[in-house]
Length: 240
Image (cartoon, rainbow, N blue to C red; front, side):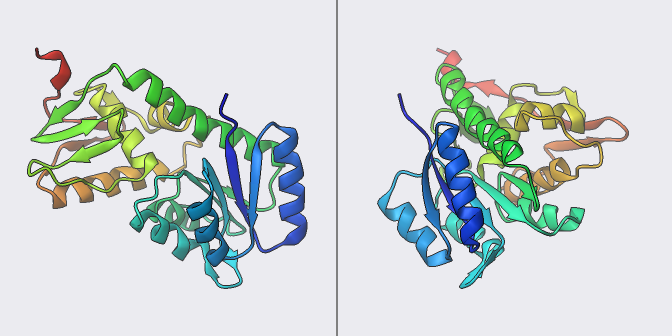
């Protein structure tokens, strides 16, 4: 049985020790880092299943490191730790590719719950989607098992884990209007705050990335309702 390995990145030694001890007690394997450079080294030399990443680091910002990791085509889920509690700062964290965020100070039990939710979502996707088949929409192909999206020319669209999960949620329900609360429940596995704008941010990012590749206006905003995937979806592997 695979035991998930968590990389905890924080410049505070006491926090690293506390989280390492608590995560190990909860059944995880743990790697530690205090700098951006150490993060890159750990990822290169270890199988990391999830990164808990602090924003403030001595040799750079987690807000800068997060998109750097995504540009390296790393699909490792990232939970961002931040002392900044305003909604705009949480939104920035999601815009740069984080899968979730947690404000400091926090209860370690809540962090473990977030870690398990993100890991479970990935596991559920891989097991459930292995037999689902690929989706075709607007000339694009989404492969749930490989977790890739190809444009009509065969080029890969770079999506974060959260963006991909949201897209598949819509592809499974074409034409259905989904509220923000429903989308939070379906994609993040936890109760969402009705004021939480993370879904709006993810929708905006998906719209931009797909529009840049030629899929324009496939997401419809329904006033006082939510969002709708307004395009035909075909399951490729079910045709023959």
